[in-house]
Length: 416
Image (cartoon, rainbow, N blue to C red; front, side):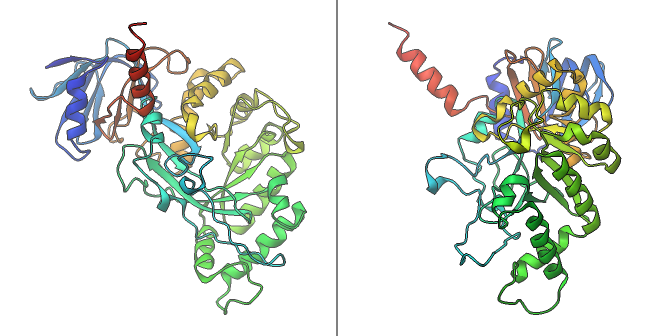
């Protein structure tokens, strides 16, 4: 059977009924496939079987009962990364009962209580209204990032798929988040140097086998968690200023951590050092104003300069309720010197590699999870929309609370 790719109600119904492990076959015919691994393939078919990409090529043959989607030459890309976010964890920012992104323990003023064992993914709600709002825009996965509470170690996060399942955490993506720079300074007694003094103390405790003392930063569970990240674990350091970035590189490598820079408004100043140390950067390519003294060197070609230096970059707006603007970040990065294909990679392939998912996500290639988006135009143009999204081979219903409200009030006002 042949079905148009615009609003295919039959495909949606079939996809919603199927699971990623089903035997259903989907053949997307005659697409302009942005593989991210083998360039752009015109008039190409993509065969999906049991939630994974089974084949990519021209005039693919398959079973008679395959669900066939005619792309009519339109762009097909991997699913888009929603950035570092709190999707499904912060529902209404102004209502505390719906916000679960940080942990705060009111300790005496002279004490610190660090809780690296805090895991934000345990609060994830797959029924959050933010999930369908994001995924109908082509966003298929995100990394949940805890927000610093009273200490510079915010806790742990991980990548999650946005297909609506409860067990949404993706394997091998567990990450520790640390806030440094001027924000971390205020959480560390008022000095950037104190950040490393406290981190050194916490690391000594993580390596210790002795009892927990009264002035300890970590509980036993925290010791175990931090010790894991000191053995090659991924740690995202939220830091902006160039000298702070250099200090993070030196510190993380000395302590056995695998560092990732988040923010990095002045990362262009130390691009060579980042490339040499193989440290990736997650940035917002629209930030060009000196919002504070840590970001005096902000500039719109930050992404382009980092890419030219050989730094692996990914983009993130940090806005959970408007995560879809990540394509706007990519498009603007192109306008300021980043090659088009590098911009698409920065919201698909690169973040998957940074968070340990490169073997399963971020490309259109056989063996990859079938997170796919069919577009009605250039994916990096703000006027382009996703006509169909698949997550693990399942067609996502292209509807959210926002579209339902739109349709309700358009209908109500039609007779006026």
